[in-house]
Figure (cartoon, rainbow, N blue to C red):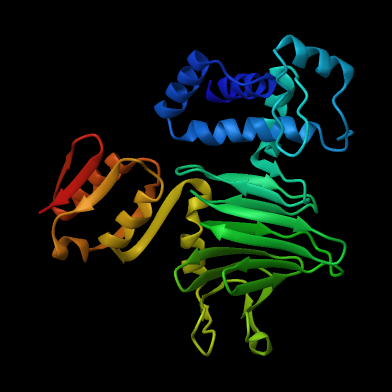
Length: 319
């Protein structure tokens, strides 16, 4: 299994610099599947997590002795010393979702997914974050504030209730604040999509803090970096469809094929292409798996009288 192999590589990387032959072997393993890079990062993070709260001072005598036996090399550090442990212990952390966290000395936690990966991660305050494909956030928990920075992608949050510590998401210049609710933020060029599934959030743009706008459950908004007003649409069915990615689906209700193709391409290395503009404008209705572009192409071909051709890396749709 990839997770087991990632754990073994993480432990080996922690012990000492790789020999040239080992580096070649690791590079080949990573190249076989782009998701393995994320698995390795999670395994390394799990090792780092086990070291939280332990002393960060000089290496233990046993480590010094091991370093001398390895020719003077000290174990690799990621701001904290790693402890070599059995794969089973790390595997338990990976299964629990803890290994999705990368801990930095500043106390900021970075959580990320690779393309095609969707993961639900517990946060330190009792909240949960569900990250869509190729997404990255930084989490900073303080006594008076819970701050999340969305660097890229899309995340759905279930926020633990705590009035004394506002939960604030930053997406570029867009800010979204909640106390105890559930909502998603997707970062886009020029702003962010905000969808609320439970409770109420407040949103605003940096520099226009006096123009805060409330968005309630079942409503959505594209919050622009530059538009003078934040427009809110009450659209509960649209919100539910937009969040179908949490179960690995793409839900469509008349959106053009071009939109569907762009969404499916976010999740897969095999990319869909449309050869004609009129086909790209065709509306599409239905539920489709985000991780199966070939079946999506076959369904589109059948529904629209089109043709799907694949060369393994590109799937072309044409009349």
